[in-house]
Image (cartoon, rainbow over all chains, first blue to last red; front, side, top):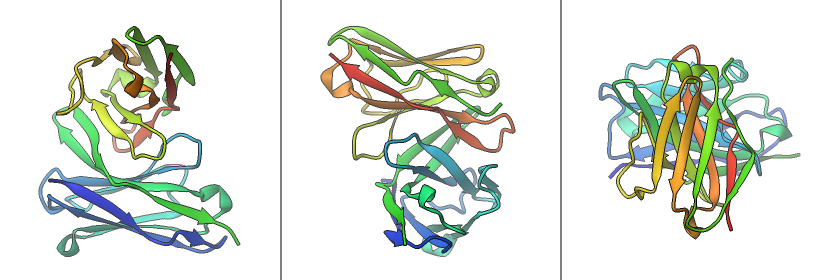
Length: 122
Length: 108
């Protein structure tokens, strides 16, 4: 059974750096084709894709946020870490991690973690 | 453009059929996947690829695509289908992803 769980601070101050950890089980990020992604959702708003990292350590970021995001993996711990610098109140959101599955030309996000709410406030 | 546009809201009578659409240039090159999200819950995959349902998703959910538009159809909508629905695909670069603007489905 594949599971993912997000962890990190519930509250950060403006200008601080946010560090979130996605701890997963049921697969290895060193296996060819495996990929983990981060997605966020501000309260009452739509999902927004943030970043991904794959088994080959390829990393891709949202073009609008790429200067603030860094994604990394620790294969031995089955973890993916996302950092976001210079946090602002508009970054208040629930942050999800999810596995991206690929089969031929098909790609899909499944499963998802339960999400972690991060509030940015002084 | 790397945007995926959805109608903000649709309503459907119990037992009737509703189609949710997702428009974007990247859909001419990449398949969409669809996610159901109920209040306070994480998104759940309902359709991926041409028209594939994960295990546990009822067969009243189906997907299709034509040109720059992907569609999710719920045939015989149930009360439990009331939720927000999001499409997703790779963006035009092929290396990144984009989510649609979301559609709130109300079952009357």
